[in-house]
Amino acid sequence: MSHSEIVSLFIQLCVLLTAGRIMAEIARRIKLPPVVGEILAGILLGQTILGMLFPSAFEWLFPSEGESALILDGFVHVSVVLLLFIAGLEVDLGIVIQQRRQAFLTSFLGLIVPFFLGFIIPFSFPEIFGFEDRNKLILFSIFMGTSMSITALPVIARILMDLNMLRSGFGMLIISSAMINDLIGWLIFTVVLSMMGQGGDGMSLAKTIGLTLGFTFFLLTIGKALINKVLPWINRKLAWPGGLISLTMAFCFLAAAFTEGIGIHAIFGAFIVGVALGDSEHFSEKAKEIVHQFVNNIFSPLFFVSIGLQVNFIDNFNLGIVLIILIIAFTGKIFGAGIGANFAGYKWNESLAIGFGMNARGAMEIILGLVALKVGLIDEVIFVALVIMALVTSITSGSAMKYFLHKNRQLPKPREK
Image (cartoon, rainbow, N blue to C red; front, side, top):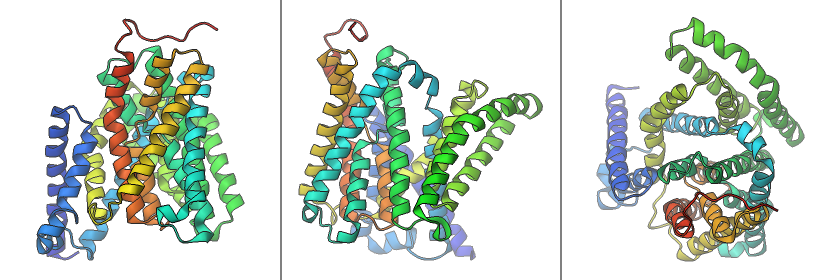
């Protein structure tokens, strides 16, 4: 890197972090998720506002070519990996097992219904979405179904904390159902990437899927047992929390490298490692909090602000596609998860509250959309619509849950069958 490119990189990081923090604080003060403010900061700094009003300033601040642009892209990739890592840390397999019946019904219908709607509508009417490549139509439809079915676990956890419901049976049902959604959804998406020929070194689809399932099974069984053996030694012998954080991060990056190498995106490896680590009794809540603070206040803003730099949100805004995706997202997830919760024994107002809780998308859909955009599966118009959908569902989730639960004096519990 030249002297000027080093200066440019540091200015970029300064501007992204500062703008992200300012807008996140504004969003927080008006009761919106901080991620909304961070994405809006990127829209202000990106092609949509700064690039349109002051194109020369935008090109000077964020040059499209050169070493600084390449390294900034590397920072964004690391940020995505770490975001999925801390999302995995939120997954508690014990809770999933404890509430397996209610969680299975809620997550199964909360995944199948939006996946079906997200698949069948684009597959039947591809021209509405401006999709012309018939050879990739099945992949595009699977991707849309997957993006409609995945739930944003970190966003849901934050909403439930704000409502003081995270540790309630009601909150745990939503969390455990979202965990199952995320695990299955990311497995489906890895298959989509493999079918697109994103496999490592020409690896066959069957081999990639086999390695994916083997990797997942190993880490959540034998790998988890090994982690439980190693973590006590790390806590005793190495400086705390530095030793624990350094080695777990190293393990995260190793798993990310492995899954990227076999043709699955690096984020899947980071997510599964997070699940395995987060489920260990030796990875304390204090250690999780340190990792969360580290990622959420440094790497998370870099990623979400950078989203606004990717595309022009005005030029690529299509009201029709945005409305269709919003209708599919709300209808599929709310009624799918709501019907599942009702079958599990919850009253209808409680079931709809659970459906709205499961409807929060946020980071997960945006990450999914960005990966699809990078590999050419979707265009900027679909990406913008997915980002808007993620923002709208995240903003409306908490208030809708409160609306459907406001008459309940006690935390909702499933009725006896």
